[in-house]
Image: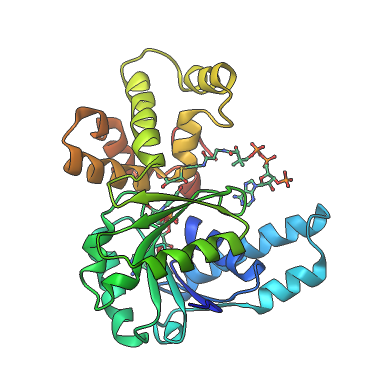
Length: 282
Ligand code: CAA
Ligand code: NAD
């Protein structure tokens, strides 16, 4: 089906990036947040990134203005009722995700495709609360969305071929490369990445090395753009903690269990870059 209008749920780290790239690719885009203050913060971040691109000469002022004219922020679900595609990017908690999909299932026509940007939750658990399990899939972007080229397209047991084809077309229209994966916890990338990140926390916890040496080791020794502890701060400690719990519940393997330090950091509000404090201070 043709996608012209895109709704994004959540304007946090990921939702803001997804809304930005959708608007820049020419889609009418509406992004919904829980309140005006959080929405304004997310929209301000989009504005700042576009402004930086203009000042670097990567984007013309006219293209920035045209992109912003296609982007609209709201706190109401009703404004998403006429979207062809809904991309959910709210907190990594199943009850919250099921709640927003239940609300939108009532508002949107049957043709609207619903996708979740979840890192680790089972797509089928969200599709099952809607009356459109054939038009439900995972569409997993990577952080920072404007930079990372990959999108994982996740086929749930009930997802139709037409839905997968539309999502491939949409992903390509964003200038990203799709890869296909089945609805298994963590899909491809997080199944490999998350145990590695958790192991870096265990190294720190057990006093093997300092945070700087762990990060330098993987940057200079393996060519990673960021060390694992820096990357944990970048992704969000709260988000990684949720992901680890979900993966451990699914696989029951110790390598997916969240290290105790991660839980204590979440309790302390040390969510990483977004809260100003994580393994490092910002
Ligand atoms: N939004 C938009 N653009 C951004 C950005 C952001 N948040 N952060 C950086 N950029 C852009 C910069 O503007 C710059 O663009 P130009 O080269 O055109 O000027 C470019 O990215 C490079 O940025 P910097 O020079 O400032 O810094 P860098 O070279 O260190 O790159 C990085 C920054 C791209 C984030 C790089 O460090 C990197 O790739 N880090 C690893 C990211 C990663 O692994 N992401 C996956 C996380 S896991 C995930 O997303 C899945 C999940 O479910 C948890
Ligand atoms: P975040 O904490 O930065 O943003 C989440 C946003 O969702 C918040 O601004 C919150 O206000 C908002 N929200 C909107 N409606 C909500 C509702 N009904 N209930 C609760 N919150 C609501 O998180 P994020 O990093 O953007 O992650 C969002 C989703 O994307 C998660 O599922 C996460 O697993 C996934 N993801 C994250 C990354 C990453 O690197 N951070 C990468 C890929 C996927």
